[in-house]
Length: 107
Image (cartoon, rainbow, N blue to C red; front, side, top):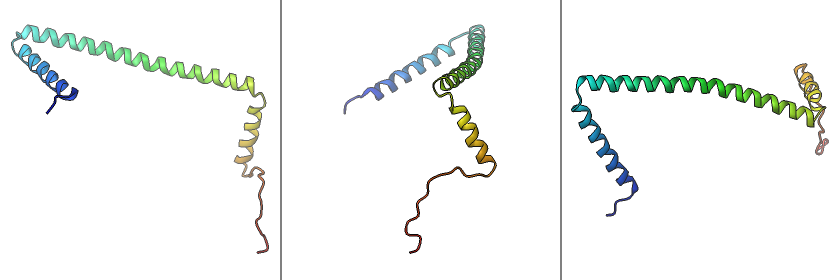
């Protein structure tokens, strides 16, 4: 039976967890509190960065949409009017003209 990468990773992860538990159990209360405060600060910084990244992403995609719209209008100048006419006719209940073929209407 050979040891593959998953088994090796599991063994190393278990060893790291055991060492961390031992290290934590030998800490003084002051050191434990200091570590907890440090983790809280790091979490709050990460949370603030994530929130700002959300607004940054929203702005980025809004700008990207506007650029794509402008580029579409530049390369297809009549497309906007065509879409307006198409959707305007559909909202009024009209069906746009489409070619239909009858296959043997009398049979």
